[in-house]
Image 1 (spheres, rainbow, N blue to C red):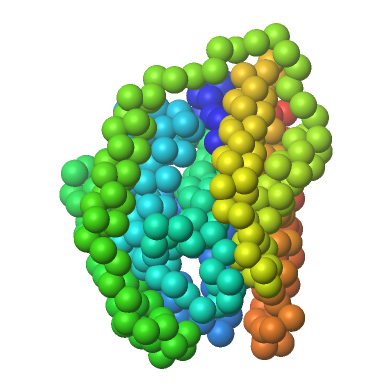
Image 2: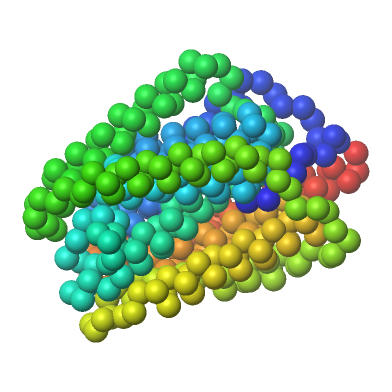
Length: 347
């Protein structure tokens, strides 16, 4: 998500305790936003939240750490988020590779041993709602530490990386060795070695690309930034069509793959163009970043109810309550941002 340095009128960062709070917030917000609020992880399966903190939370933290140490922007962060998504989909849980029966009887979008509709959807979902949105919201909560690395020592980086690897192993075991064969009754499936090689190569490519474009910034323009609610509603409009990729898998007749994939990539390009254009506008401020994050959060929470008719009542009510609390929290954050802006203008 677009970001700039905080105004010099704001007070300096206040020490390691606030730094630890920022780290803890990101570790929790990444799986909370990406998994729990969206309904991907329901209340009845909340025990998986711990390995999700280890994989998603530590993954988002390490991505942010790399980008801040490189002096990179949101394009670098997005690229590393795509690398994390490929690691999840090809290596850790391999959900984009296994022929899962709940993805529809027709096998729509499955080409070259990959569930391409699902994979394309998850590339965007995991890089945005696991990485970009949680990082943006955490930095809006702790604006004075926005441009700083939060892991001050090599020891902190190593510990985070070790927890990530351990969490990845736990997630792999729980899904591939337990849930997939016992809950979803999927026969043992081992993807070809070549598929893993392609996945690893793609991860390396995205990491290198993230480093190469670390200095890439949109040139500031005199164009006026969009209004706050226009930003929110336009973001919702950009996000919701993306869920068509998931719907296509369940259509009870074959769907041509390539038109849908080309349209999906074109739509992703449009979204990047719009956000890049917005972020270079005159007057683009923290409230606009909040609106961008709020629109993305509203979209994922609303879309998460699409399959809820088959859930236990406890899961539906739990998601509804958590979503209401999330909206209330975002409104309080917006008030805090407005108050900070007022204090900065008076300084």
